[in-house]
Structures are given as C-alpha cells and as structure tokens.
Image (tube, rainbow over all chains, first blue to last red; front, side, top):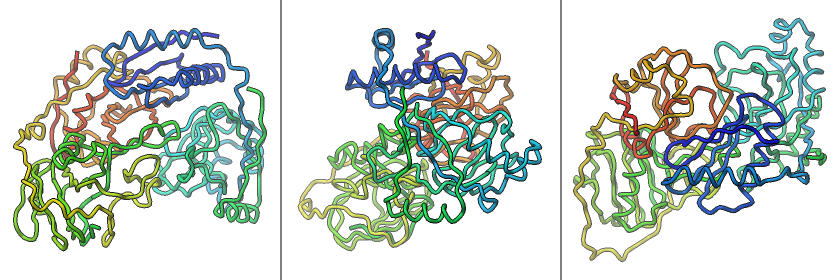
Length: 243
Length: 282
C-alpha cells in the first residue's frame, strides 16, 4: 500500500517526509518499511533517521545542495521497496505494580471515569499496545492502543518530579517514564524494568512496530524484579510475533 | 589533569554531540556555539570534534596539574592566568600548577576552553557531551579532576592568535527557513513574525530559549512529531520556543521555523533581555 507522501526540506541538512496526519498501524508499517529500505541502501551521507506517528526525518552529514535530487532518490526507494514479510516484531511482557503505593492518581481517574480502581487496572493490562516510536526522553515509548474508557486529560499543573518507572495516562496515551522527570500524566503504577541502558550499543529493547502488554505484579514482586534488573540479570518475557 | 577549584554558573564538557541515537530518544547535545568551539580547537590544531569546556555566564577556577596549551573563544569573561590577564582567541602556554580563572562577562554569554588534544572524559554513545541521564553528571562539579594530556613539548612554540570580528555577538538578525507548519499561518501572521522584534525570556538554557512576547495564533495542534535543534515552536498560548542543542527528539507544538545552523551560534551567545529579529531565507 502506498500513501500520498509530502517531502519538505527541514533546515539545511534534513528532509521531512510526512504521511497523512492520523495515527494508524498501516501508516506505522509503511514508515518502518520505508525506513528499513533506506537503511538497507547504506547511504553514507545519511547520518540520522528518526520517525514519529506520521513522519520520517532524514538528516545528512552536509548541506543538501539539491533538495529535488535527494527527494527523487528517496521517492525511488519508496516506490521500489516491497512489503517486508520477514519483518519481525516482538511482544514484550512488562510487569507493573498497580498498588496504591505507586498508583497515586488511580483515585483521581476513578473519580473522572466512574470506573473502580480495579476496573481501571484491568482495562490497562488487558490491552495489547503498539510501539509507535521512541521520543520525549531517552527510552520513552510512544504507545498506541489505550482503551477509550481510560482517556483522561493531563494534570493541569505538571508534577516537578515523577519517579523512574512510573506508568502514566495522559489524553489518549499511556507510557512509562524511563527516568525521573517532571511530567503531567496521571500515575497509575510503576514498572521495575529499565527502558534505557547507557551501557548497550542499542540502549532500548523495544523498537517501533513491537507490541507491549502489561502484567500486574505485587509490591513484593516489584521489589524482587527491581533487584534482578539492577544486577543486570533480569530477562524480560517476550515472544516473536509475525510482522 | 585539570582540577576544578570552583565552578561557574554552568560549565560542561561538550564536543559536537551525539549523532545516530535520536531514534532512541537521545538528544544531540554538543557545543551551543559551534563556531567559537571550532575556532578554539583550530587554533590549537585539535580535531574538530575534540571535547571543550563550555562555560556559561561566569567561569570556573581551574588548576592545571600538567603542562599544556589552551585557547579560549566565544564570550569574553576576562580570563586570567595566575592573576595576569590573558586574551581570548590566542594560544596560551600552561605550566603545571598554573591557575586559570575568569572575571566579568563583557561580551557574549558562552565561552569555550579548549586544551591541546581535548578533554578526555567518559565517552558514551560516541560522544563526551554531558547530558542528564546519559553521562554520569550533566555539569562539571567542584573538586572534579578532568583528564587531559601532559604536553611539555610546546615551550618554544610561538603564540598563535587571531583578531576576529565578534559581530555575531551583536547582531539581532536570526536567519530562518520555513518550518513544516509555517504555511498554515495566515498571511498577516507570517508577515508579523518578520516585522517585530522578540525578547529572550529568563527561560533560556541548553534545551530551549523561550521568547517573552505572546504571538496569538490559530494554528491547529499537531500529532507529536519530530524536531531538531533550531526548530522554533509556537504554542497555543502564543509562546515562541527556540529549541537548542539539548532539546528533546520529538515535540507536539506546531513548528513554524527552522533556524539556519549558524543562527544557533548567534542565539547561544544571547540571554535574558536580548532582542532578536527573524529573517526568512528565500
């Protein structure tokens, strides 16, 4: 499937490619297909490729003197690349403790949605989420697939400090803070998993197109897993799924 | 080794930044004023990517535990070597136990200290640039020992120095390209952005410079998308935000401009209360 893409120069050294302005898995697949095809060409002048919900940004190592030429070359790659059937995505099973000790905004969400705390927790871990891209903070996964019933606005005033591992809901998004940070999302739990590892060449285990599901754990299990994670021996449960 | 006797307002080690890790959410970082850092490195014959110390507003006091040569470029903070005044943009010989200090800021905002061969601090993801959560700390700490090479061989070398026009410190003009959402602004708003001056607010740092004036607009919000250092965002409440080297990899506000790269150097030498005027590159 081909989309009607727009190509725009972005500063002196980058080209921004945009898909229709909607969040959809078809667009995500198309972005990944195009990004992979460009990467496979090993074009030396390209130093950075990054994607978001509906765009791909390509940065070159020097000023693009002829924007039209670069665009023609990219269009050729787009139209000649085939759907990659052997593209492997992974389903990651992420433990989360939804205990009130961590889930400091569960009551607030319950008040807003008229759902019980247990219903909120179940709706959150029953879903399978799609990783769209990584951004905002090192290792922060943008996830799609939050149940409509759980959509609640961000807090009017962001908190100055949100703990590492906090699981939040803001608008139609859910996500996990990979490091301590200020933030405006409603916090419903905490994951002991590390989402960003500076000691690894590829610092994030998940990539765009992967799936995430959550498993509810007790506070004791959270403590135990955290010990294993800190010791560098915890293996995240995962399974390979068809692309 | 260089020992940090006293820290300044905000000192950090920076090179040209981290390239290739944006897809993991890792900012570029790197020197805010590339021109000044390159100049200091070039005068010493260093590699363009050699790590320098970026010094903001007020300088640290540093004691050298070895011989080397140094060069300071960018903002003028009245540097002194053991109580004698030294010049920016000239190669200075350093003997073991010399103490480098800084005085009053007279021009610009960020100064760059290059040492022969560069600082040898921890390299993470191919870069020594300090950044919160990536390097052990995000700025230089008091009593820290920074590794540099001992070079006794320079004692008979002639001083190299260069006289420069520091005109980029004084210019208000910031050259920009259209950003992805620029064309969604009304024609009146587009013209207005180039006819008025903007003031840098107190919210300015390595991540972003927010501007004081409110620019009311009716841009539609965008789905979280990609940004770069030099992207100018316009918020629904009318705030203009210029993203700088430590900016996040993604953002949700409409992107109205993208700065020409050398305009980032111009902004890096400005701070609270300074005015700027955008000029469109056609």
